[in-house]
Amino acid sequence: MQIRVGYELIYDCPQPTPMVLMLNVHHTRAADLAVPDRLVADPPVPIHAYRDGFGNWCSRIVAPAGRTRLFASGIVNDTGEPEVTAKSAYQHTIDDLPDDALVFLLARRSKSSKRYSTSAFVEKRKPTRRPGG
Image (cartoon, rainbow, N blue to C red; front, side):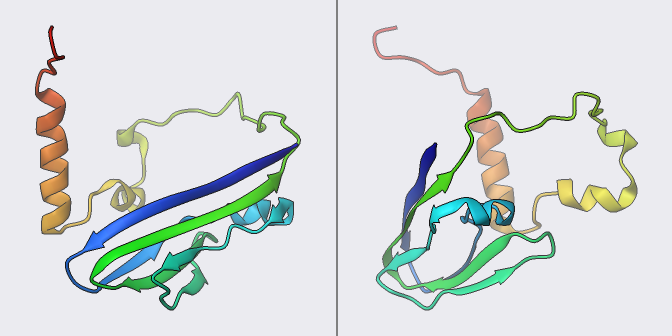
């Protein structure tokens, strides 16, 4: 079977904004791509692709001030079968993890991450009201 994959992301940046994007099909499925999922930017900007330390494809851009549209569309050949799962895999608790792994669980230390994590926490606690109810 063939599965169409893709996305459209639209950003409004107040100034030129560097971005690191991780939007491609995982490299282990690259051979299954009937149509590659190539990143396109509108307006066009230089796109620098690289592999990170985990083998993921990443793309670097500098989005210009104003509206930037990022999109891609591709087709993946797939068997339709579920992925193999390790039924005996154990879910570790945080206190079981080695100290070296904890850095991957921390939020970035920046004003924006603090603002977003706080607002998400506050919004989560607010009761939601539905119109008429």
